[in-house]
Length: 277
Picture 1 (cartoon, helix red, strand yellow):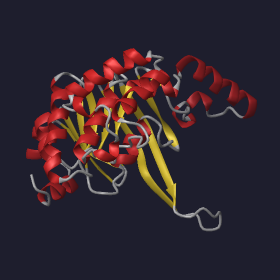
Picture 2: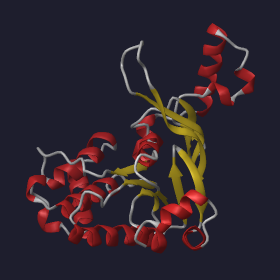
Picture 3: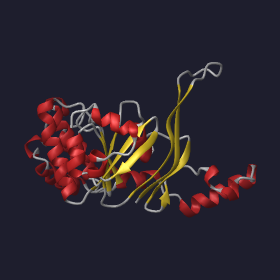
Picture 4: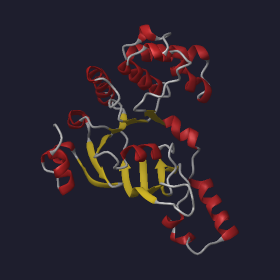
């Protein structure tokens, strides 16, 4: 479903050419996510987890490497992955890239419609009410009629337990309610996979359970998901695979029982010994 090939992302700590300090945030990641999988990504702060998730739908643009969705590339071509392009330059190289793009590449907006995204800080539009937040993308991108989009949106609000909040504005909602609206907004596009970027980290403790319960029910219904989280209980209960990241690398990738009970990587062993499980 999603294939990541030698993904590299760098940040520069100064904007001046004379003092440009480079930080490698993602260091040559290679990983596959299959349809139906529930993959949880954990690791210490600053390990590149959220950056990786945002690169999957090109909210962050990688410096090199490729991202493929359903056997079609959504990122720029990474020339270092194609030995046959190594000796081409100038016009010949540009023509070859155009041919590869014509054959392999899919439109990023088409890809994003297949990949829902739920953010740590909700990212709702404060000037729109709840139902408008949910229906905006289906109307604009999927060309749904207003009536059809509203019908879908209200059904989703019923699904997440917020039907009575359809005409409220985000400022009137709790953090947990905002996140459930954000999940409903993502579902309105009928995605093939949902990317969750620390969906509970900005919530008050008493609000976490409701959001996790909704995510578990989506997993039970077969929704593919890739989730960055610190909720180890969720990872144990829901994940089909757990990835451990540090220093922009995936140091361990294994089923949850093996991940938590018999981790192979020493850094992961240390990490697990210092968190509440």
